[in-house]
Image (cartoon, rainbow, N blue to C red; front, side, top):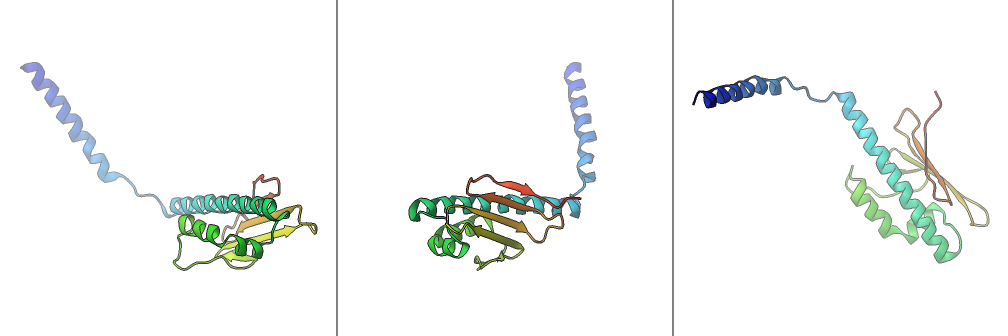
Length: 149
């Protein structure tokens, strides 16, 4: 009986001493929230770059050449709007626009070779002060870029 009383007292002591720690927990700072938002934006930007590469390969096999941004919008409107609905939910009724600013805060440069057999695409977060961008070409390799400091 004495053993159970000691165990119960020890357990209650641990609970009593451990519970006040929760009231002193801190909420994340605004800078942490900004970093998380920025990381989320960069992940979305990379996702769009993967989507563009996929659509370019699709057009290449279907039409024999890579496509301009305007042509991608025409050929793959459903795919691009589906990407917007799933991964870019900042504002309602947002649609892809023409270059250079295809979405608010996102700039795109898509250069095709004259024969249509290659392309270079740069997608950048124009709100990011570090110059964050994604770069890719017809090989499908995506590179992350930032300004040199």
